[in-house]
Length: 345
Image (cartoon, rainbow, N blue to C red; front, side):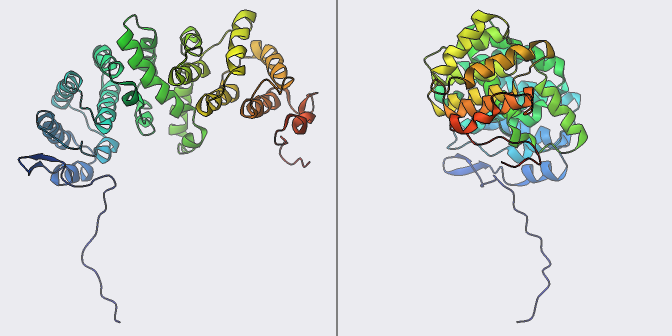
Protein backbone atom coordinates (compact mmCIF):
# COMPACT_ATOMS: atom_id res chain seq x y z
CA UNK A 1 0.00 0.00 0.00
CA UNK A 2 1.41 3.35 -1.03
CA UNK A 3 2.39 5.79 1.68
CA UNK A 4 0.38 8.99 1.88
CA UNK A 5 1.93 12.19 3.28
CA UNK A 6 -0.18 13.55 6.15
CA UNK A 7 -0.97 17.23 5.99
CA UNK A 8 -2.37 17.46 9.51
CA UNK A 9 -0.74 17.53 12.93
CA UNK A 10 -2.33 15.61 15.77
CA UNK A 11 -1.75 17.21 19.18
CA UNK A 12 -2.40 15.30 22.42
CA UNK A 13 -2.87 17.31 25.61
CA UNK A 14 -2.29 15.16 28.73
CA UNK A 15 -4.93 15.64 31.38
CA UNK A 16 -7.34 17.50 29.14
CA UNK A 17 -10.46 15.38 29.08
CA UNK A 18 -13.00 17.64 27.44
CA UNK A 19 -15.81 19.84 28.70
CA UNK A 20 -16.48 19.54 32.41
CA UNK A 21 -18.59 22.56 33.29
CA UNK A 22 -22.24 22.34 32.41
CA UNK A 23 -25.52 24.10 33.06
CA UNK A 24 -28.85 22.52 32.22
CA UNK A 25 -26.97 19.78 30.41
CA UNK A 26 -25.08 22.22 28.18
CA UNK A 27 -21.37 23.06 28.23
CA UNK A 28 -20.74 26.53 29.58
CA UNK A 29 -16.97 26.30 29.37
CA UNK A 30 -14.83 23.85 27.39
CA UNK A 31 -11.46 23.87 29.13
CA UNK A 32 -9.99 21.72 26.36
CA UNK A 33 -10.75 24.34 23.79
CA UNK A 34 -9.36 27.69 22.83
CA UNK A 35 -8.51 29.01 26.31
CA UNK A 36 -6.14 26.15 27.06
CA UNK A 37 -4.66 25.94 23.61
CA UNK A 38 -3.93 29.66 23.42
CA UNK A 39 -2.45 29.65 26.93
CA UNK A 40 -0.15 26.76 26.03
CA UNK A 41 0.94 28.05 22.65
CA UNK A 42 1.55 31.56 24.02
CA UNK A 43 3.63 30.14 26.94
CA UNK A 44 1.45 31.71 29.59
CA UNK A 45 1.16 35.23 28.20
CA UNK A 46 -0.62 37.61 30.55
CA UNK A 47 -3.47 38.12 28.08
CA UNK A 48 -4.29 34.43 27.78
CA UNK A 49 -3.82 33.68 31.48
CA UNK A 50 -6.24 36.51 32.31
CA UNK A 51 -8.79 34.85 30.03
CA UNK A 52 -8.33 31.59 31.92
CA UNK A 53 -8.72 33.47 35.21
CA UNK A 54 -12.00 34.91 33.97
CA UNK A 55 -13.24 31.48 32.96
CA UNK A 56 -12.38 30.08 36.40
CA UNK A 57 -14.14 32.98 38.14
CA UNK A 58 -17.28 32.06 36.24
CA UNK A 59 -16.77 28.38 37.00
CA UNK A 60 -16.75 29.08 40.74
CA UNK A 61 -20.37 30.16 40.67
CA UNK A 62 -21.56 27.40 38.35
CA UNK A 63 -22.54 23.85 39.29
CA UNK A 64 -19.91 21.34 38.20
CA UNK A 65 -19.46 17.59 38.22
CA UNK A 66 -15.71 17.62 37.99
CA UNK A 67 -13.04 20.29 38.23
CA UNK A 68 -11.18 20.95 34.94
CA UNK A 69 -7.62 19.67 34.53
CA UNK A 70 -5.50 22.83 34.71
CA UNK A 71 -2.08 21.22 34.86
CA UNK A 72 -0.93 22.21 31.33
CA UNK A 73 -1.82 25.83 32.08
CA UNK A 74 -0.17 25.77 35.48
CA UNK A 75 2.98 24.19 34.05
CA UNK A 76 3.50 26.97 31.52
CA UNK A 77 5.67 29.95 32.38
CA UNK A 78 3.52 33.00 33.14
CA UNK A 79 4.33 36.53 32.05
CA UNK A 80 3.04 38.79 34.81
CA UNK A 81 1.71 42.32 34.54
CA UNK A 82 -0.16 44.43 37.11
CA UNK A 83 -3.61 43.62 35.76
CA UNK A 84 -2.89 39.88 35.75
CA UNK A 85 -1.51 40.05 39.30
CA UNK A 86 -4.57 41.92 40.56
CA UNK A 87 -6.95 39.51 38.86
CA UNK A 88 -4.97 36.52 40.14
CA UNK A 89 -5.19 37.69 43.74
CA UNK A 90 -8.90 38.38 43.33
CA UNK A 91 -9.39 34.87 41.98
CA UNK A 92 -7.30 33.35 44.77
CA UNK A 93 -9.37 35.16 47.39
CA UNK A 94 -12.60 33.98 45.77
CA UNK A 95 -11.39 30.39 45.69
CA UNK A 96 -10.33 30.56 49.35
CA UNK A 97 -13.72 31.94 50.37
CA UNK A 98 -15.51 29.23 48.41
CA UNK A 99 -13.07 26.32 48.35
CA UNK A 100 -14.06 23.81 45.66
CA UNK A 101 -14.33 20.33 47.14
CA UNK A 102 -12.56 18.51 44.32
CA UNK A 103 -8.96 17.56 45.12
CA UNK A 104 -7.84 18.81 41.70
CA UNK A 105 -9.19 22.25 42.50
CA UNK A 106 -7.43 22.35 45.86
CA UNK A 107 -4.14 21.55 44.15
CA UNK A 108 -4.75 24.31 41.64
CA UNK A 109 -5.62 26.71 44.46
CA UNK A 110 -2.24 26.05 46.11
CA UNK A 111 -0.49 26.25 42.76
CA UNK A 112 -2.00 29.68 42.07
CA UNK A 113 -0.88 30.87 45.51
CA UNK A 114 2.70 29.71 44.88
CA UNK A 115 2.72 31.36 41.45
CA UNK A 116 1.54 34.63 42.98
CA UNK A 117 3.99 34.33 45.88
CA UNK A 118 6.87 33.93 43.45
CA UNK A 119 5.76 37.13 41.72
CA UNK A 120 5.06 39.30 44.77
CA UNK A 121 5.81 39.15 48.50
CA UNK A 122 2.49 40.85 49.24
CA UNK A 123 0.84 37.48 48.47
CA UNK A 124 1.94 36.35 51.95
CA UNK A 125 -0.92 38.43 53.34
CA UNK A 126 -3.28 35.77 51.94
CA UNK A 127 -1.37 32.86 53.51
CA UNK A 128 -3.41 32.69 56.75
CA UNK A 129 -6.68 32.53 54.80
CA UNK A 130 -5.36 29.86 52.44
CA UNK A 131 -3.85 27.71 55.19
CA UNK A 132 -6.95 28.02 57.34
CA UNK A 133 -9.07 26.85 54.41
CA UNK A 134 -6.80 23.81 53.98
CA UNK A 135 -6.74 23.14 57.71
CA UNK A 136 -10.52 23.17 57.94
CA UNK A 137 -10.92 20.57 55.20
CA UNK A 138 -11.68 16.98 56.25
CA UNK A 139 -8.43 15.11 56.95
CA UNK A 140 -8.82 12.89 53.92
CA UNK A 141 -8.84 15.97 51.65
CA UNK A 142 -5.73 17.41 53.29
CA UNK A 143 -3.70 14.59 51.74
CA UNK A 144 -2.25 16.64 48.93
CA UNK A 145 -0.42 15.32 45.89
CA UNK A 146 2.32 17.94 45.63
CA UNK A 147 4.73 16.24 43.22
CA UNK A 148 4.18 18.94 40.63
CA UNK A 149 3.41 21.73 43.10
CA UNK A 150 6.90 21.41 44.53
CA UNK A 151 8.35 22.57 41.22
CA UNK A 152 6.71 25.96 41.68
CA UNK A 153 8.26 26.68 45.06
CA UNK A 154 11.64 26.64 43.35
CA UNK A 155 10.63 29.98 41.82
CA UNK A 156 9.74 31.48 45.20
CA UNK A 157 12.57 33.46 46.89
CA UNK A 158 13.93 31.61 49.97
CA UNK A 159 13.05 34.49 52.30
CA UNK A 160 9.37 34.18 51.36
CA UNK A 161 9.46 30.40 51.79
CA UNK A 162 10.98 30.84 55.24
CA UNK A 163 8.14 33.15 56.22
CA UNK A 164 5.61 30.67 54.87
CA UNK A 165 7.29 27.88 56.84
CA UNK A 166 6.78 29.78 60.10
CA UNK A 167 3.03 29.24 59.84
CA UNK A 168 3.65 25.65 61.01
CA UNK A 169 3.85 27.14 64.52
CA UNK A 170 0.95 29.58 64.15
CA UNK A 171 -1.28 30.11 67.19
CA UNK A 172 -4.46 29.50 65.21
CA UNK A 173 -5.08 25.75 65.01
CA UNK A 174 -6.71 25.88 61.56
CA UNK A 175 -3.82 27.86 60.08
CA UNK A 176 -1.26 25.59 61.75
CA UNK A 177 -2.96 22.39 60.53
CA UNK A 178 -3.14 23.78 57.01
CA UNK A 179 0.55 24.71 57.10
CA UNK A 180 1.49 21.26 58.40
CA UNK A 181 -0.53 19.57 55.64
CA UNK A 182 1.02 21.80 52.97
CA UNK A 183 4.62 21.56 54.12
CA UNK A 184 4.36 17.91 55.09
CA UNK A 185 3.64 17.11 51.45
CA UNK A 186 6.00 19.65 49.87
CA UNK A 187 8.98 18.72 52.04
CA UNK A 188 8.37 15.05 51.25
CA UNK A 189 8.74 15.85 47.56
CA UNK A 190 11.78 18.06 48.18
CA UNK A 191 13.49 15.15 49.95
CA UNK A 192 12.46 12.59 47.35
CA UNK A 193 15.78 11.59 45.79
CA UNK A 194 14.17 10.04 42.71
CA UNK A 195 12.13 13.17 42.08
CA UNK A 196 15.13 15.46 42.46
CA UNK A 197 16.93 13.61 39.64
CA UNK A 198 14.71 15.55 37.25
CA UNK A 199 16.70 18.66 38.10
CA UNK A 200 19.68 17.97 35.92
CA UNK A 201 20.93 21.40 34.82
CA UNK A 202 22.99 23.66 37.07
CA UNK A 203 20.37 26.35 37.64
CA UNK A 204 17.68 23.88 38.68
CA UNK A 205 20.11 21.93 40.85
CA UNK A 206 20.94 25.18 42.63
CA UNK A 207 17.26 25.90 43.23
CA UNK A 208 16.77 22.39 44.58
CA UNK A 209 19.61 22.83 47.06
CA UNK A 210 18.06 26.08 48.25
CA UNK A 211 14.84 24.22 48.98
CA UNK A 212 16.76 21.64 50.98
CA UNK A 213 18.34 24.45 53.00
CA UNK A 214 14.94 25.32 54.51
CA UNK A 215 14.83 24.73 58.26
CA UNK A 216 11.74 24.05 60.37
CA UNK A 217 11.33 24.38 64.12
CA UNK A 218 12.34 20.98 65.51
CA UNK A 219 9.99 21.47 68.46
CA UNK A 220 7.00 21.36 66.10
CA UNK A 221 8.18 18.10 64.59
CA UNK A 222 8.94 16.57 67.98
CA UNK A 223 5.49 17.45 69.26
CA UNK A 224 3.89 15.60 66.35
CA UNK A 225 5.84 12.34 66.28
CA UNK A 226 4.09 11.11 69.41
CA UNK A 227 0.62 11.69 67.97
CA UNK A 228 -1.68 8.69 67.62
CA UNK A 229 -2.59 9.81 64.09
CA UNK A 230 -0.13 8.33 61.59
CA UNK A 231 -0.50 11.30 59.24
CA UNK A 232 0.48 13.70 62.02
CA UNK A 233 3.40 11.47 62.93
CA UNK A 234 4.63 11.41 59.36
CA UNK A 235 4.34 15.19 59.10
CA UNK A 236 6.36 15.57 62.28
CA UNK A 237 9.11 13.22 61.09
CA UNK A 238 9.21 14.99 57.73
CA UNK A 239 9.62 18.42 59.33
CA UNK A 240 12.31 17.07 61.67
CA UNK A 241 14.24 15.93 58.60
CA UNK A 242 14.73 19.58 57.65
CA UNK A 243 15.52 20.86 61.13
CA UNK A 244 18.50 21.44 63.38
CA UNK A 245 17.46 18.78 65.85
CA UNK A 246 19.43 19.08 69.15
CA UNK A 247 20.86 15.57 69.05
CA UNK A 248 23.39 16.55 71.74
CA UNK A 249 20.52 16.93 74.22
CA UNK A 250 20.26 13.49 75.81
CA UNK A 251 16.60 13.96 76.78
CA UNK A 252 15.55 14.94 73.28
CA UNK A 253 17.65 12.16 71.82
CA UNK A 254 15.97 9.61 74.06
CA UNK A 255 12.52 10.92 73.09
CA UNK A 256 13.38 10.61 69.40
CA UNK A 257 14.70 7.06 69.65
CA UNK A 258 11.78 5.91 71.82
CA UNK A 259 9.27 6.89 69.13
CA UNK A 260 11.44 5.41 66.40
CA UNK A 261 11.56 2.11 68.27
CA UNK A 262 7.76 1.87 68.34
CA UNK A 263 7.25 2.68 64.65
CA UNK A 264 5.22 0.03 62.82
CA UNK A 265 3.24 1.57 59.95
CA UNK A 266 4.99 1.44 56.58
CA UNK A 267 4.63 5.17 55.89
CA UNK A 268 6.03 6.01 59.30
CA UNK A 269 8.97 3.61 58.92
CA UNK A 270 9.83 5.05 55.52
CA UNK A 271 9.70 8.57 56.96
CA UNK A 272 12.12 7.58 59.74
CA UNK A 273 14.44 5.96 57.22
CA UNK A 274 14.46 9.13 55.13
CA UNK A 275 15.23 11.19 58.23
CA UNK A 276 18.24 9.05 59.07
CA UNK A 277 19.53 9.29 55.52
CA UNK A 278 18.96 13.00 54.96
CA UNK A 279 18.79 15.00 58.19
CA UNK A 280 21.51 17.70 58.07
CA UNK A 281 24.46 16.85 60.33
CA UNK A 282 26.97 19.57 61.15
CA UNK A 283 30.61 18.80 61.86
CA UNK A 284 30.12 19.67 65.53
CA UNK A 285 27.32 17.09 65.86
CA UNK A 286 28.84 14.39 63.69
CA UNK A 287 30.37 12.41 66.57
CA UNK A 288 27.10 12.37 68.52
CA UNK A 289 25.13 11.23 65.49
CA UNK A 290 27.65 8.44 64.94
CA UNK A 291 27.08 7.28 68.52
CA UNK A 292 23.31 7.38 68.00
CA UNK A 293 23.56 5.33 64.81
CA UNK A 294 25.86 2.85 66.52
CA UNK A 295 23.31 2.52 69.31
CA UNK A 296 20.54 1.79 66.81
CA UNK A 297 22.62 -0.76 64.93
CA UNK A 298 23.67 -2.45 68.17
CA UNK A 299 20.02 -3.23 68.95
CA UNK A 300 18.65 -4.91 65.81
CA UNK A 301 15.76 -6.50 67.69
CA UNK A 302 14.38 -3.10 68.70
CA UNK A 303 14.24 -1.47 65.28
CA UNK A 304 12.70 -2.47 61.95
CA UNK A 305 14.91 -3.55 59.06
CA UNK A 306 13.88 -0.38 57.20
CA UNK A 307 15.31 1.81 59.93
CA UNK A 308 18.38 -0.38 60.43
CA UNK A 309 19.22 -0.28 56.73
CA UNK A 310 18.97 3.54 56.66
CA UNK A 311 21.05 3.84 59.85
CA UNK A 312 23.76 1.63 58.35
CA UNK A 313 23.87 3.70 55.15
CA UNK A 314 24.24 6.97 57.03
CA UNK A 315 26.82 5.50 59.39
CA UNK A 316 28.87 4.34 56.40
CA UNK A 317 28.73 7.88 55.02
CA UNK A 318 29.78 9.50 58.30
CA UNK A 319 32.38 7.04 59.49
CA UNK A 320 33.68 5.51 56.29
CA UNK A 321 33.97 1.77 55.95
CA UNK A 322 37.62 1.49 56.84
CA UNK A 323 37.19 3.39 60.13
CA UNK A 324 34.03 1.55 61.13
CA UNK A 325 34.07 -1.30 63.61
CA UNK A 326 30.46 -2.33 63.00
CA UNK A 327 30.06 -2.34 59.24
CA UNK A 328 31.01 -5.99 58.97
CA UNK A 329 27.84 -7.05 60.74
CA UNK A 330 25.26 -6.46 58.00
CA UNK A 331 24.49 -10.15 57.71
CA UNK A 332 23.96 -10.47 61.45
CA UNK A 333 21.55 -7.56 61.28
CA UNK A 334 19.66 -9.22 58.44
CA UNK A 335 20.52 -6.35 56.08
CA UNK A 336 21.94 -6.16 52.57
CA UNK A 337 25.73 -5.76 52.47
CA UNK A 338 26.86 -2.15 52.09
CA UNK A 339 30.05 -1.78 50.04
CA UNK A 340 31.99 1.11 48.63
CA UNK A 341 32.56 1.78 44.96
CA UNK A 342 34.83 -0.80 43.44
CA UNK A 343 34.69 -3.05 46.53
CA UNK A 344 33.30 -6.57 46.25
CA UNK A 345 32.09 -8.90 49.00
